[in-house]
Amino acid sequence: MQVAVIGANGGIGRELVSRLADAGHDPIGVVRDESQFDTVRERGGEPRLGDLEGEFAPALRGADAVVFTAGSGGDTGWDETLLIDLWGARRSIDACVEHGIDRFVIISAYSASEPLAEPEALRPYRVAKRCADDYLERSPLDATILRPTTLTDEAGTGHVSAAFDYRGEDGDAIPRADVAQTVVACLANEETVGETIRLFGGDTPIENAIRPTD
Amino acid sequence: MQVAVIGANGGIGRELVSRLADAGHDPIGVVRDESQFDTVRERGGEPRLGDLEGEFAPALRGADAVVFTAGSGGDTGWDETLLIDLWGARRSIDACVEHGIDRFVIISAYSASEPLAEPEALRPYRVAKRCADDYLERSPLDATILRPTTLTDEAGTGHVSAAFDYRGEDGDAIPRADVAQTVVACLANEETVGETIRLFGGDTPIENAIRPTD
Image (cartoon, rainbow over all chains, first blue to last red):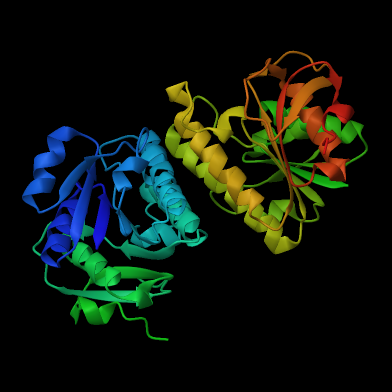
């Protein structure tokens, strides 16, 4: 299927475009600058311009599913956290609702469940992520919320540890490549619709880890 | 009735405590520092400590209604906008739901209806206010959302211009005292429950201006 990746030039986004192409999907890489087009093409994606603060919805044309992995990153101000991580996510969700794109996966953060937890420095970020997650959860979309813990640039292992409705201790860091592979697995498994899944580094093959255990 | 004012030391909050007392209510002034207690007492309110990032719900004990007018202010960072204007509002709403306090009035901002409008500098602020408003709107509380335009410290006039479901041009600046008086009027008028009201400076007596015209 056609899968639009919002934030296709980010750490998870780049891995995701490659893995979607490998899995036989047609990835659309939504980026905010034409200079990022080659990165998307090299990974097997169709690059499109989309400005989360400007014209944006046309970039999703034809998509069957959307993955939101845009993030303002650690080097920008909290104003960008409000505008990209929160409002950009809401605009993406609204655009999907408006254009009949039903399937939506958001890359959230482990600690979005408890915004005021320690460390204090992460609180504003968690507020933004949590509010975006809640907005998605209340939308009519077929949504999956992924909450990975600390991310690394290590090579993917194809294995993770996943936890549903989990609010316990944090776990091992997880490679961005494994988060990306988890997205691909979620898109192939309807059982993940409506689920919020915490992700850690681990030993379970990804396809098995994301099966809800009722 | 007992009305808890969250942000009782702010510009609108101080005016509101006085006006609630004048109207025969028992205002509770929720502030974050004991040094602000005298300000609340001088205006006829009962001061209580409440930390929107810490222990908070006990400050609302016994309240029949809550008014949220806490704001991080223009001198703080966007991190505080996320933590106070957005998450603090959500925590206040959650606390009311949990403790059976049904009536809630939030002081929002004129431009929260269009977060990406000009001027660009206000966008992150509007995102926070809008998300707080939406959270309140979707809550089970009897809510009124007030969206005043530019605020001044001029003396109150007892007159405003109010607009329901309005997305047109901005209007005249409005004294904080008149916003406070509008809150008092809304608490006395059940017809304002479920309404989002834009407020400008104007010529209509406040009690008349806030009557919805169906």
